[in-house]
Image (cartoon, each protein chain N blue to C red):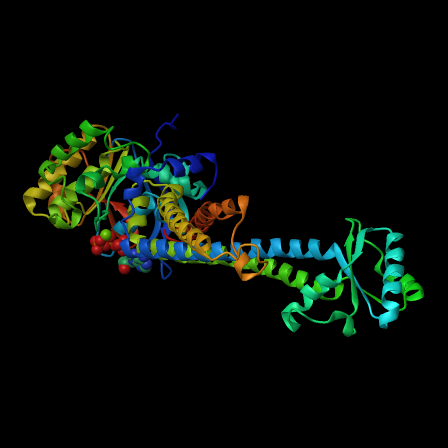
Length: 301
Length: 232
Ligand SMILES: Nc1ncnc2c1ncn2[C@@H]1O[C@H](COP(=O)(O)OP(=O)(O)OP(=O)(O)O)[C@@H](O)[C@H]1O
Ligand SMILES: [Mg+2]
């Protein structure tokens, strides 16, 4: 089947008379509708997963890259001095927006979940924590470590890099996995439609022979099938997407908690992405059927 | 411009084989515009095969078939479709779309060529009346009798007003009266200037026709086509 603007227009306009030349196939039609609906439903989740992991990767990457902590592990009498020294060093380190030692109350609050409210902080060798906010350009962690080692022996810099990297890369992998799943689903739609179109063409060999006899061109015959499968894929996947979106919308959200499971879903313009699915499914069905038909019609005489 | 003396369908030293031995050998036939031919021969002689060569459904294994002065081997698939619109064919085992009413089946050549049956309304009605199927228009083909199907096939073959009508055993499963009616329809078409070729083994049909029209009889025997003499 040759494909040009003319065929595309004919396809979109439809031709009720032409549609009737191929006998209606109730059962196959319903299977195609169902399968493309189910595929679109799954694709919505794959997309939701992918977009959510993308957002997570970005947020974790951003947030963690911009904070760091220094622990001052020193004997009771040294702690205050070393803390001041560390703050001194930090104030002259490029890339650090601000740094401040946590107060006793704040440290107590941090530990409260584990040790209860009235922990005698000064009686325990709890390290003092300094919270660092990093500028967008970041700072040189190795250089800072060297300076701290020289000037503040009890300081331990934790730039969160150790545990940040695997988290971010896991989120990125998950995003790629989501996209791959969506692509595989589209591939499955193509395979399913090709099979269904082949079956329909084979089942209608007699119809094709009659059409040939009365002077139908290959593209006319192909279009009768292509239009059918394209419409079925469009309608089926449209329904699947709507149901999928509803399901995603109904997923519980965790409010402000930065959990992963509660973050699956769409945000803002992201809600529009799945709406492309029916169009893509229809395009995939169109190409798959046109391909199947042009091959089948070449062999059927 | 057609070549002077050119036929609408020309076979030149044509041979055909389905894979085994040659079924048809060294056949040269020319159907002049407006001519009326019968093709006869025993069952299995290759009448249907020769007809299929005449509308491009089969390609000769040797020699040349020219349809409207174009060699069939030079035709693209779409060209074949266009040629089918100029050659009306009545199949031996009449083929219809069983899910569509007779009227739509008869109008099918119009539908597939992008002209609508509604546009051809009066023509379709006239045609249905001509073959006496007006009151069967809404029936689907499986509901028709053998003779009704043959008439419907003839109506479908001529709805595009083709230059040529090829009919394979058009009177195959009808009684004498009906076969005379069908013959009359074909003779009428020929009077309108159409080239007609009828494959049949029914010699009485040929005799009946000879009374109405100047018909030539081609006979397939021994893989070749001869012009049959007055021995019929
Ligand atoms: N598609 C095919 N493949 C192989 N052999 C075929 C095919 N079609 C026909 N034949 C053989 O070719 C021979 C001629 O067949 P054809 O249908 O042309 O005969 P015919 O003269 O029309 O016979 P009838 O009067 O019975 O209709 C027969 O022996 C038939 O079995
Ligand atoms: Mg035959």
